[in-house]
Length: 393
Ligand SMILES: [Cu+2]
Image 1 (cartoon, rainbow, N blue to C red):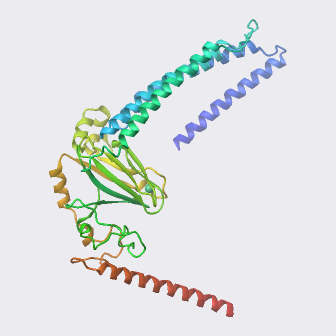
Image 2 (cartoon, rainbow, N blue to C red; image 1 turned 90 degrees about the horizontal axis):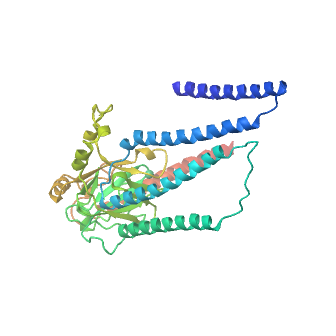
């Protein structure tokens, strides 16, 4: 409400200013003074100059205000390179921005209308045109080459560590399904057909494959410091986007097209907290928790593709542990999917594959299918009898 009142007051203030100006002009006209365009143009020039100076001051002020609460340093190795690329680009663009914007407004001030001023006809200048074509061309070429080098390093499949840990993340409205390969380090095979994919086995995991028996769902993503990770991504309904802002990782999850991202975490969650502890903004109290912000800092996975109504809820905690031992401890505490239904699977007891090489899941799949068909038949018969009833009337 207060916001609206302030907005209304600002609008009112400027409306009054415009009306005063108009009245002034009219009264001058009536008094026969005529319009003093030179004076008006001079004032316009002062205002232009004042505007651009205020504009730059406000940029510096906003930067000072907001920079401390922006995302902290990169928690992955490649992220340092992309950050560096960002800063170098920002540096050059800032120079261009300041020079061109200042020139634009300064010229408005310097060359305003005046009785004794005469416009200069200046058709072209080869030297000037060469300078403003060649210099930007060189700067842009350097930026493009730098960007391509970083890109090829990040996506260089050949130089990847073959022992990287692999995590499979599948997105759906509105959830992340993170599958870990379990202690054996191998994922169970998936069969992507309608007979294997059902509400209780959304990924179509082949329970006959022994490797699938220890795969587990993770309620948070756990990575190991300095251990490369390959995240294999998929989506079940619409396009989602796998975003780990602190690690500078972003990759779309597209239905039907597998995507992946390879990176190496550099700082554990604890190390990041220790780093943030030293920064003034992170020392302030978070009103939601009543504790300093650094204390409750968590790495985050978020969806960064507007994917539907509850898009904002597609979050997951990400934890980086210090070594394999700590990771194995966590793995030991997880329950394999094989004994529990997938997250969100409604009837908890409808699918519990047990024992070795059982085909129970297939049998149960059939039961579910039969049940579904029967329901559909019932619905159809109700509908048709209803319409028959109507038409007979
Ligand atoms: Cu999404």
